Image 1 (cartoon, rainbow, N blue to C red):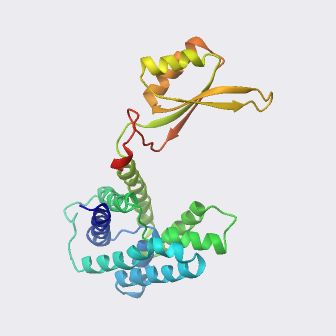
Image 2 (image 1 turned 180 degrees about the horizontal axis):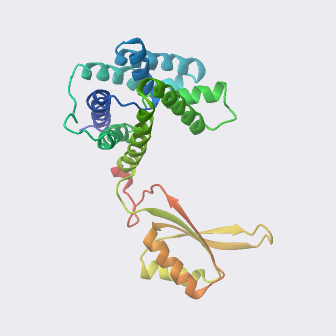
Image 3 (image 1 turned 135 degrees about the vertical axis):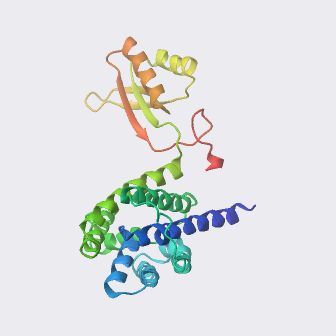
Length: 288
């Protein structure tokens, strides 16, 4: 199958899963979330109107605002799903089905929602698509009003504001459930995007024993590396450094070896979200 067609298939499977999460898990159990979905549900309950139509109206408004403020380039990124995902949500809203009707535990329901919604969103993001929801609003507000803040901070403020408003309509307990759902949702997206693989770290080593360290990495733990250069901030001396991406276990083996041969060495271990390449333990670029 053509890769482009496959991308659309996966993206719309993701959209259907998202809509299912809202229609068959979130809404029947009277729960709330942040973002445009939460805002639509809140407005819909206040004015007693179908939240899916409110969602569509908000998406179209965001699309128009993005065109005016951010330009056509940003609109092209979001126009497809901004106009089609709400239709999927509207159609699926006709399904009157509570997926967890036999589950009285609200915590479990939150976990189910977070997993389903995270999988759906992860599939969309993995294929490079965007739905132009509250992240686009954050970009607009950042450009026009809050340039002194980071976009992630603006986005956080938007979600907090929506949840606070929702708390008055759905109750304070619903806000706490929303936080639980957000945590599960975020973790699930991370798993969909980067997998269950062992945690990767980036290791930077400055030592007078780089030759021995490089031999250990190459022959004992079979880990590739690069050689770079660094200048001391105080003495301006140029020194070599080893840079490698490996598992946390391998990083600890390297650290233990260095401890035995150079107690004055500098070692920096930084968590890495993901890395692609042909090196053992890394993800194949063509498969992602």
